[in-house]
Image (cartoon, rainbow, N blue to C red):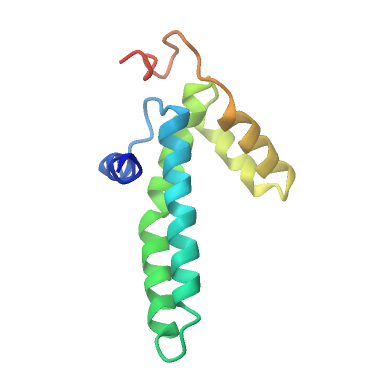
Length: 121
């Protein structure tokens, strides 16, 4: 149940790019996104209904685009990096590896310029 609660909590902060996000918040949201992607792709293989699920997959993906970026920016804030570092994903392969390295790091234990430690709150 925590997965769904976390997903809804991130959606409530739909376009909030300020503040910090814990590792748990970020990775549970990513896990939810991966699960949705797999489910829609499998349902898209059903003959006759595949097109409907492919269209739904596109709509859900478009709706979740901003929340994925906002939680990523807040996660970078937690490790003390500015949100513009999220653009590193535009560099093929290397950018993705860097982003993963930054997002798996422990957040700064003290308050930083982006806000107080969300773990302590």
